[in-house]
Structure formats: structure tokens, C-alpha cells
Image 1 (tube, rainbow, N blue to C red):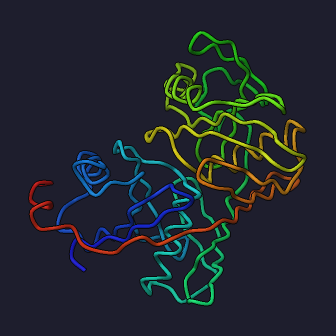
Image 2: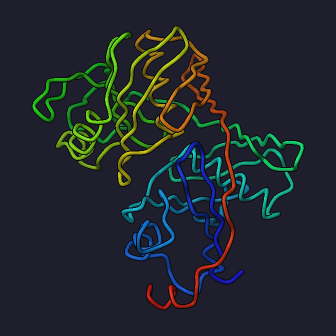
Image 3: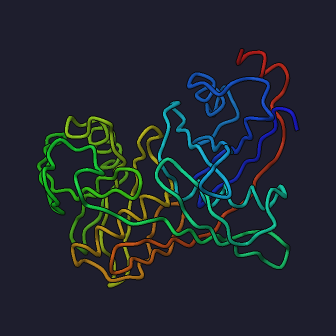
Length: 289
């Protein structure tokens, strides 16, 4: 379909999937911002672009709504997997996808209607090493580091799951508010400690194998749910001894199940939904040009 798109969401975190070969225009940062705009465009938390890969069955590029490119997205990968299955681009239930943040393995869970309504993703290995985290403070592996932000002195855990994350914990029994997220999220994302910006999770352990998180995504802002954020928060909490694996991560949009292996390899399982398929109108495409 010329200028066609597929739209899906994972726990309220929505993406538009596009095959660039079907487009009559190139995907520039400005055009991505317009397409993702919820008032002037199609509206989404980002764009997933199918690309060739020499290392995996499929290649994926992930674009944030501000036009920047992300290395990895757990919800995006689940949506992309459903797109591949729903549009007949694969009949396999197990396949690999190459992202900028590494190669992942996908397993589809097909329901009685023939829909891949849940997806398991082998998300790779979490690391707490400074080489994987663009943080000017880190010179060696540390899991609890100070940060002064928005008039507060806090402690964060830096972790990479193919993309960078800053996890800030409160003790069990306390909570974070949306006001905290809106105040701290952008300030931490753009803090001088993170020259390439970072994703932010405000987390609280709520049980022996359970976490509650609020999410501020780099390049997207407040987000209802995030697979990579869930993986980052779960791995940081396990590393700090706050919870044990497997971890149920609860977010405003719902929950994901994260298994953290002894070597911090991560497996994520969660639901995914298709919302719509269609094509961009000729007049909208002309406006992009």
C-alpha cells in the first residue's frame, strides 16, 4: 500500500509502523515530528521503520516523536512483531530483529483468533558499565550514584539495556506522583551528566517480586508504559537487592513480566494490540513535502 501504515500499542505506548519502500517521501526528522504530532499529524509515541538486515531476519529503526532515533524499544519491538505477523511478512513464530541497540529474539503468542496478542522478547543483557552509558560521572561500575536535580539531591542507578536509563528509587511504602515525574523527568533527561540524554524511571518496590514505575522517555516525554524502561528498572532493582526475579513491573498503562537472569540477561513478556491500518492521504503527503 502506497504511503501505508500500521498502528499498534503496547499498554498505551503507541507506535506507527512504516515500510520506507512504500513511501513516496523520505523519513526526515521534520517529517517524523509532523507524522507523530497528535494535533497536526497521525499522532504516535514514535515511528518504527522496517529496514533490511544482514544479521537478523528483520531490521528495525526506531524514531522518537521529536525526530531523534532510539536504540531499542521493548513496546516497539512487540508492536513491530505483531505488524510482521499481521501483514504476512513472516509466518514464523520465532525470529530475530536487529536494532541499533543490538539483536533480539522474538517469540509470538498467537491467540485463538490468529492474532499475536502477546510477545516475548529476549532483550539482551543489562549492563552497569560506563562504556555503555553516556554519563560523565561514571568512571567505573557503580549502581548508586548522586545527582542534584530540580533542587533535590537524589541517588540514581545507571543501566543500559541497549539504550541508556536513569532509575531513581524510593523505599518501599513510599510513592512517586505524576507531578514528580513532570518536574524531574525533563530535568534528569537533559542533565549535564547525560550528554546524549537519558530515559528516566521513578521506581518503588511494592513486593518481593514487584515494582511500580513512572516513565519519562528520552525524546518522547511522559509515557504510559515502556518495555526497555521496565527491563532497566527490574535489572537495577535486582542488582540492588530490592526485588527478586521474575519481576512484575507495574506502570500507568499496565504491567509487564521481566525475567532477570544471573548474568542480567533480560526476557520481557507482555501484550500488544493492533489499532488500525491505512494510508496517509495525498494532501497530507504533499504537506510533508
